Length: 200
Length: 187
Image (cartoon, rainbow over all chains, first blue to last red):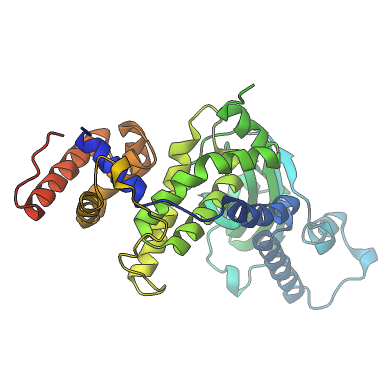
């Protein structure tokens, strides 16, 4: 005589017998996995869009406030460095870091424009998860952290993964407002952690 | 030599497709059964399981080798299947309500329950609300422990225990009502 529990199990098993093809299903899954693994993560659309948008924004900022372009020979070395930061040609494969390290986020400083007016200077850390970007961290950046510097020190996230660091906004020093913009893509390697991937 | 699940996961993380396939074959049957019992539609159950495997394999790097794979993966299956069922319920997909299982065959002499008994019990299970039906499915189809069910459904272990108890009581009551009080067995 079966127990009630055994009857429940039998009932559920008999009403869920699958006659589909595991081979066919595996074929579909493996075919979708291959292009995914072959594709380099930093070549994926969200990162490219994000990076491209930043470049365009930086270019617009730069051209808006330098209406008469200076001849190359007159550019200060530091100015050239700032321009290079946002050069498409330098759009980059991510630099590899380990948790706990510091990354130097080189930034450009510009006269403020409408987009940046009264916008607090913030550092946002975006993480790529399943081809989407989620905000992994955000904080205000204070004037003293960047004043007289060409880069901001940023603590590397602990969680391994691909991140995009974005520094943007304005700060006021001695009554003068300055806009700051920077972006960097990094790959954090190291000890893996168990991430809950579904939070429905 | 039998390869352990941990070893399989390690190999899968290194990109060995044979390891991924072995993981797939080890879990596909119970995943499909579970997804079907949630969605009540074979095509969408297969879609949900396909999406679940893709998500699991793409997220393997974030999975700790030493933990059992099944509860982690089952959570993904449940979420995918529930999401699909919600879409069905909202009418975004055709919903074959109470679709009869085309693969089901009875050999009453081989079973302790006859067709009528199975139908009655299955009907009663489907009458349960999700809060009480899902723990049953995870226990009897996926073979999860109560602790693993708790983790999968993100509820305390004590609540899993009580939901399983209440579910069994309701099933008994339902069957007894249908059979005119004839069913009177212990849990």
